[in-house]
Image 1 (cartoon, rainbow, N blue to C red):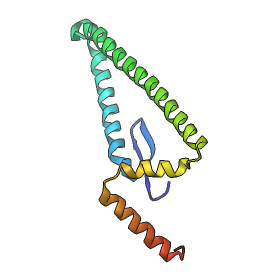
Image 2: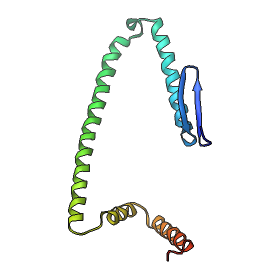
Image 3: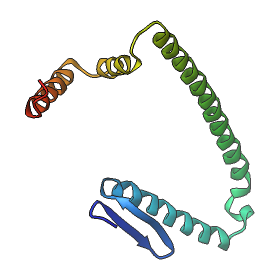
Image 4: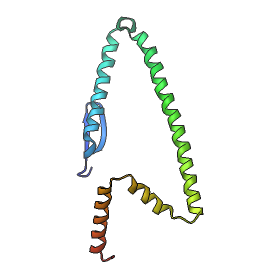
Length: 133
């Protein structure tokens, strides 16, 4: 483990080496797992009929299935769009344009003008420092 990761282990739960900037997220996962374990212990004390879980299981399962099916449809659409983008880049390259330059322009167009100017200024400074200008 280097200085940028931390090992989190509590009882039986081991999240492994976690980057320091992800410690908060790892702790949330740990809390969720601990809560799940507590719920399992409580569920073992009472029958599903006593807790009313029998009816809730069917509803939760149906809702979960709907979410999963929506995600699957969106993943299919994302793959189709990615294919379309790849095709456009192929056409662009066939017409003599540089795909790398176009990707850079697309990335820059997503940024506000101030951010682009700052990036250019830093790039110019670094290039001057390296004797590239």
